[in-house]
Amino acid sequence: MSDEDKNKELEKDAEALSLDLAGKLEKGGISIEQMEKELEDFLTKEV
Amino acid sequence: MSENIKNFIELTEENVVETGENSESLRQGFAKELRTPYGGSFTKKLRRIAGAFALAGVTAFAPEARTPELTDEYIEASAHEFVEDIKKEDKEAIYRKILEALDTKGGVPISGEGPEKLFKAFPEHLQSEATRQARLAEQGEEPYFSKPEVIFGKDFIAKNPEKAAEYMKKIKDVMQATAMIYTPTGAGSGTFINFEGQKLLLTNAHVVQMNENEIIFTTSTGKMAMGRAQFLDEKSDLALISTANKAGEEALSEINAMDLLEESTPAPKEKLVSVGNAFSFPFEVLISEYGWDQFIHLQNNNTMRALMHTPDARFRKLASFYRRGFSGEQFDKGIALPGMSGSPLVPLEQKGRAKLAGLNSLLKVNVKGDYHSGAVPADTIKAFLESYKTAMAHGFSEKEY
Image (cartoon, rainbow over the protein chains, first blue to last red):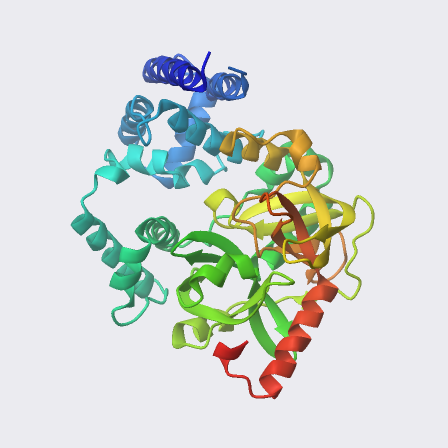
């Protein structure tokens, strides 16, 4: 996969995670610790 | 609502909003904010939010932690508008308002046409810093610094209350002697030091050399003033900033400068503290451990001794969020910490007032542009100050260094 494709994938995943977290936060269905964990997993995973 | 969410809301209630209704509104605003890309990118957005989370530390969402409110995300979420969308005219109005607030709350506005000119040159730095100062001044609080719970962890404080209090006293000392420095092309830190009866503002040459006449510094007492590079030495990467104006003198009158340590090499694994503009989070506290002395070959064929130190876990975590490429291994090798250049490096456990062991720096080591972090040791600083003294005694004008 080219770097450009990797970036596109990453951006797509980031958008999905962002929307997911926003939805959960609105409904009060996620703790901040869980949110932090999900962000950390996302930011540290290898593409 | 989980306990953590409750804490999250309490955090914002304390500092941003006043009623339960507004808390709910803020939570919705934050959720809305999450849906909006930052700079066109969701990755950047998540990274910034995670950075704010990480900055609040392992005890991240303790009600006492205030850092996240200083991020754009919080400000935007609480204001229900986006910084990027604010029209230029409105930004200028905001800036004027900030200056008024600084004035009425004891701050020192920059006089004459300075504000407009500077605002045009580097609005973002000024806006974020001045907003922060004005908000804290309105709340009657001292500028932000990391809470003990965040820096050391609740467990450490519970087990070592006296030691934690002693550490915090030392950190406040260091903070008093620290300045945040802004130039049109970047941000860094500065350190107020005592030298032969004078208080001097010391920083790294590389922080100011591109903009020698366009420097703004802010102090921990909330004062803001303009300065310019007065004496600069690329070889040691050191520079003195002239504070010779009314606002600068007022700022200096309120702070306690630090003395240099006689012994400038810390003991092995000695605990150190730095306060600086880390990743553009002003007055952030870095706890680190002394590692080793390193002779670094600089690009200009000079060799310089530097004190290499390793940040603690909390700071590494913050940095890893801020810049994804940073890793623990890189920190062990002493990779630089953006914004900390010019910040003081002080032994945390030594008795008495804080004394300067070195000045955190960023050293370009070869033509490829590789960098090492490390602090310029106190003996090098002393030699630099002696050169300054000699130059001034021989009547060099400030432009002839």
